[in-house]
Length: 285
Picture: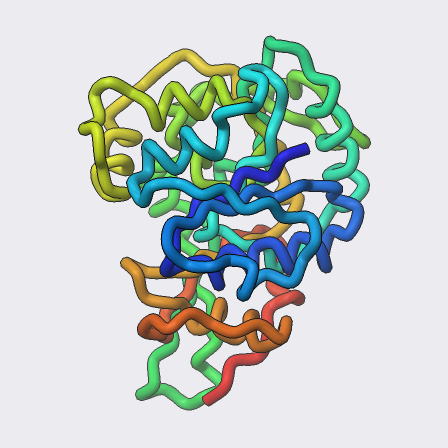
């Protein structure tokens, strides 16, 4: 199965971390990762064998078009942008079951997500004015505040629990009734046809930037058959903040023996998880 990595030249080192973490944390994932490049030589950066490099113009529309150009419209791919890299695998048996299901899925499913859309994640801010023992304090939004901001993830469509649409390895998967933007950037199994509805939309300029795309994603709405678990199957980290490298991502690269990109490093980080951060590395002071 193809792993479609949305990245660009300045972030090839981050895309390399994405590939290495999947290969080491989920060694039987069996993905062939497609890596876009324009002017840089990716072969000098990647050491993994399960990669193929796709030469593409730098704009996003052309990049996605090149990554998907020869793939069947309704056969599943693994969508994994460089800004969401795995930190810890929680449910390997379920992940294998989802991958096998996606390999044989028919045309009645648009995407199968691997994270619970009702959890916003854990955000950590490293404040240097605090003692070091406090610097890794993790802040969850209070339940009341999360409810108030729930429109950013998934609206509360029903007053009570509902039955999952299907189960894989004992894990229930629920039809996503909310906006298609919810969980769009998270790792998921989806189809080229579904991705093209977003990236090739006529409402977007011919050459658009990631901010323009994000605003479009927030404004658009379309019918979709997407499914998500009510538990995180893996935790993921956000690699950058407006083009600056997260300290946790930087430390993860050093842990895996990888060379970080030459961009500014910031102490902020964001982790998406629902059961702790055992896989996270210790931050340097």
